Length: 148
Image (cartoon, rainbow, N blue to C red):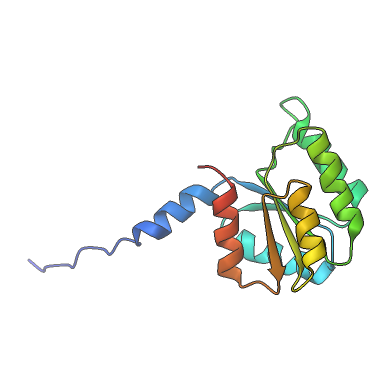
C-alpha cells in the first residue's frame, strides 16, 4: 500500500478572506476609466461582484437599484469612490449621507490633497485613502469597512 501525503489546506487567512468576499457587491465609481478597470479587475480576482459607474447619474441609478424592493434589488456592500479632481463626487457623498445611506464609502484622493481628504471625512466617508494605493492596502480597506 502506497502512502500518499495529506492534501495541503490553504492558510486560515485565505479561507477567511474568501468567506468575507464571497457574493459581496462593490461599486467602483468616478474618476479615471483606467483606474476603474484596474480596481474592478483586482476585486473580481478576489471574488467580489463588481459594478462600475462612470458618472454621478449612473452611480445614482446603481444606488436606486440597491435600495429598491426585492426581487430586483442588488445590494451594494461598499463603494469605492475616486474623488481626484472631482468635487462633484464629494457632493454626491454628501447627498447620500444626507439621505441616511449607510453603505461604506472608501474615497480615493490624490496624495497630498489634504483639503479633499478632510472634506471627504467631514462628509461621512468610511475611509479616505491616498493614491496611488497598493492592491493589498485596498483589499484591507474593504475588509475593514464591511462587517462580516
